[in-house]
Image (cartoon, rainbow, N blue to C red; front, side, top):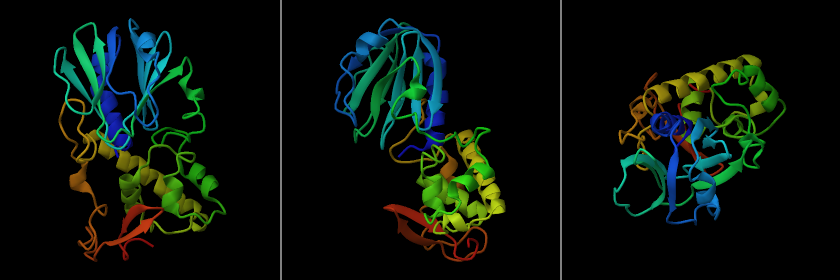
Length: 271
């Protein structure tokens, strides 16, 4: 699944093409995504000027004077900037055609993505209203994490992947952040000290910043809006490296499953 850095990379890739442009037409080929695309979405967007572009968690928010379209890439979704008249391919579900004859095309093979109408204030939408703070924002720090985890028996990895605690930390970057902080993914959240939480919050910010600067992790289902893959995967220390030597100490990386998600850690460097 595209994680926060991949979504942020996509946002930065498509914003120069969309922002301050007027939408000429919206073509929906398949409404049956994770949630059905609203029947009136084309009418709401056609003729509207895109006045804002931002990300909330893993949602891309396309703002107009009439309201906001809310797009989620799901498990396998991607956006492309194409020239008008480019023939659609399999799984090309939506085209946003601009008056400058450019197309923003949404492709989603597994159809776990979504395109919804969020109205004038998207932050009150049911899918966004209960989200936690952005991990790269000033509201997210060690104190926030400590308060969220205090007295809880849930694992620290599950805590930081809970979107009500903090948004956008998916499985890859949770594994990597915990490795850098020296914390095992199985550690109970309530047993981590304030100092440990401060360390973890800092590592989360650093890992995400690095991933964004390098264009997101290279995954088989994701490419940035300009067609170039991300390159952060060359720096992965633990994720997907079962039985390979730790980049710090050389001990073999261990693997386990938590809440149906793969966890990777070094038994020597993480405790």
